[in-house]
Image (cartoon, rainbow, N blue to C red; front, side):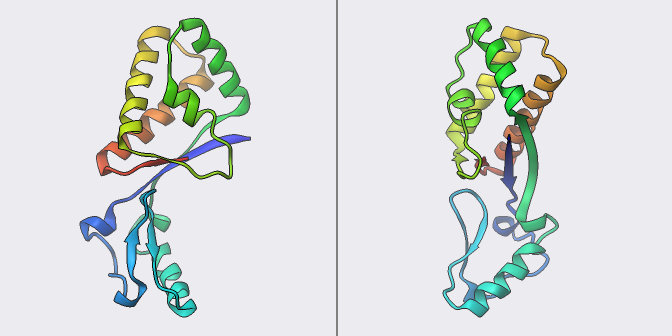
Length: 155
């Protein structure tokens, strides 16, 4: 079991698409940042799906995807952070406690809080074992990306 996270692109919002969507698809951006179709016609929904896959140069609109950590890495990380005394409610309560199969999107305020928690952890702990450093870097990359495009971080 591992935790994966992603950030969707903002190509629709910026008008940076290869092809514009058809009006009958009623394309909008969901709360998690993904493009979606409001049409009820099955043919339109199918056509939207084909368009969505390659609408921009990001497959399915996914700007960045990272595998954050395995269950073993998360357990080791929790042991290390408990010893440091750092409190990380977003990281521990939402990101690392996330259950696969249950989509959750961290809104901008939670992304900002996560960024601060990661900075505080770096100051408090200093050196990480390689697998934990990889997890922290993956989260830092995701946070930076989400902030850059003003999109949620999706677990």
